[in-house]
Length: 237
Image (cartoon, rainbow, N blue to C red):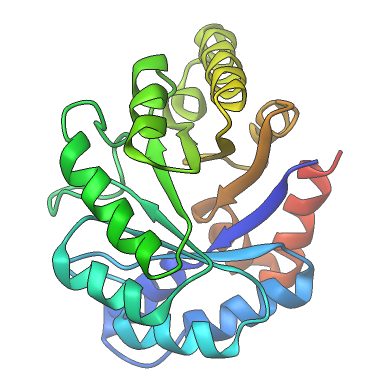
């Protein structure tokens, strides 16, 4: 059964709508911990549209769970990561115009820059994962760049029409198998929710699922602890 790490970015999104103090993503993360999840994820964007530097530092101090810091390759954010030292750094692409991450890193095109970022993070003692599309070339490039882990982008699967979903799921299965054969730890995430998560959770090589928006949206209605527990029940079927 895969681990579940919960992304609390969108708790911060609600807070930043009023530029106030509440709701606090740190408080949400502590409820995630109480509910039995295996980790917490936050994305420190270069434009600081939701999670702020203070959130990352306080989470690192207060959480007993592993902290996964999603980030681009901006030098300032790399420096913060090296100072805070999360349990995992997941490198993702970033565009200021996007509402959310739109696809995986193009590691083949930007291998030198990605490899430099990996070296810098690993020298600070931080394991590194790369968020990539389920394509063999990207997976091989991730391994060659020095990553020990990949997170497969599940967005196309999550957004697919019913008649296309089987094909998208098979792409994820093949990619996860190839990554596992290459010695990479396999995570998966993006767009996963209570209706589509089970088939991905059953892919043998997937060790961890990263889910945020669906859980935070559910938490608005039923509370964070219940929302996390409901997802855990599906992930661990």
